[in-house]
Image (cartoon, rainbow, N blue to C red; front, side, top):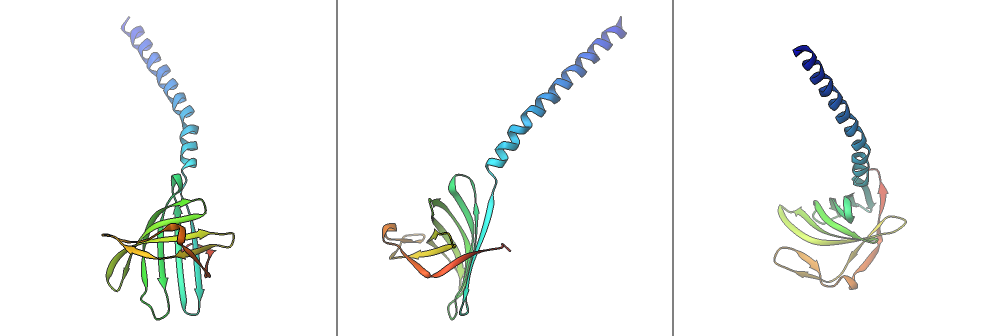
Length: 155
């Protein structure tokens, strides 16, 4: 009798274990789909002319959020390099850029417009807040079309 009871318990255990494995397999495609929807992608852009170089790497996160790094190495000016976090608003990228220059840490707002050819940086009147320098008014920004950051392979 004990042997029969043990056999039945083992059979039920194996049967429920097999059913649990099937339920895990049916969940897997959904989990993979969610991962694919939130895939992180990076694009890099560069400008180089007359001893001036700019390199930007932007990583797109979910919900138009981005992060990345940016380096300005302009001739006869101090190099600055740092990271940024921001958001795409259509073809416009607004971000807070934290960088080091001359051993000093600073934060300023940056703006880039995405075009078919690459990214163009915008500039305009600034104001200094307690923790960072920001644009006075986004609607008055001017594009510096002389400097086009073209897509490049990331490094």
